[in-house]
Length: 460
Image (cartoon, rainbow, N blue to C red; front, side):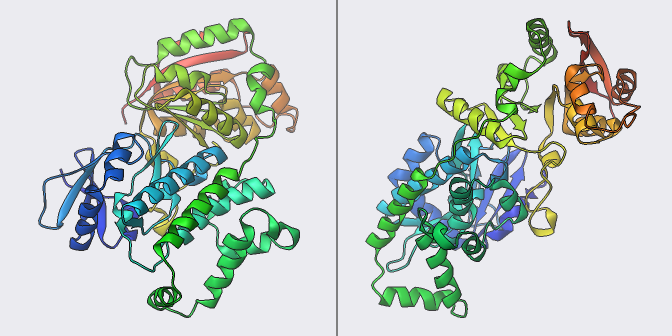
């Protein structure tokens, strides 16, 4: 099979990540190959791989193009930092710093500090960019500091210090938040909040002062000033302490208590669980749970699938779900933050560097429970568009249609002009669903205003 290159790997001039026969490989140049051998010889690398903190990696068959080829464990689902909750980003940042600290102890450092170098096994972060490690050079600072600030530290500060959701900032720029922009947000008394003076104001001032200097000149200046290995280690320890001290407590919202405030009766809940359990295939590789809320159905799906992606628009709900899954040691359910009416687009170079949610999906099954009415009535998305989208995400769908007479639908319709949604009817939805899926099962919940369907996507 012909190999396909990972679009984002162009950022590393010394190697490329590519895919062949469903497996992940990394080709290394001669210089990168030397760095790899130095990394592979360390104790920290072996220990981190064994603990699942660095993706499993081994040397593969060599090619004419590359000095060394590595084979990596494949991550079940690729997510991006702007799809993570606060606690997820903080845990990813702490793992990055822990690995850097361990690398420094054995004479290595990391040349990158990007949040994109981390992924997830459920609620456990894992570092994937083994090519970013290299031998440390005496008298030089941590080269990944700026990237770390822009993609991890600054977003955490925005949410911890200012209660601003960081996700829109990271989605807006693949390179993260610039120090100059942060400085404008942290003027006056805000500059005295934890870490701001040093990592925002001083960072921006130093960056501005050295704007006309080459990287080599700056490094030479630091060496002449006596910048030492111990100072690098001390800096990393200080950042670790800062990140651990940053916190954000999710505010109470309608969705955090949805299971208690929604209109489901006990009979509805029991019937819904029974239907979902019967509708899901006995074994799947990937299931998407759209509008996952507290993860009730994601956990059910995880019994039938190697991996479940729990998608929820409320960052506070995702943060709580993540903390619960983390405490449970769950490695098969990944919660992500995403507005289903505005799903993650392709971003970065040519809009292809980081693939869209739809391009990453390819699920065996999609759960869309209590979602359709929010998209169709709450966000004015036409029913044909919703059904087409579901068909693009997965082979099988388990979907719930909430009729206009349902209390929740009435609540949404109360905020809309009368007669705005004449086609929002069960018969219309069933016709559309039947055009794209072969409906295998159908069940009306005891309340009489909600119907569940299980369908398999039609060929073509």
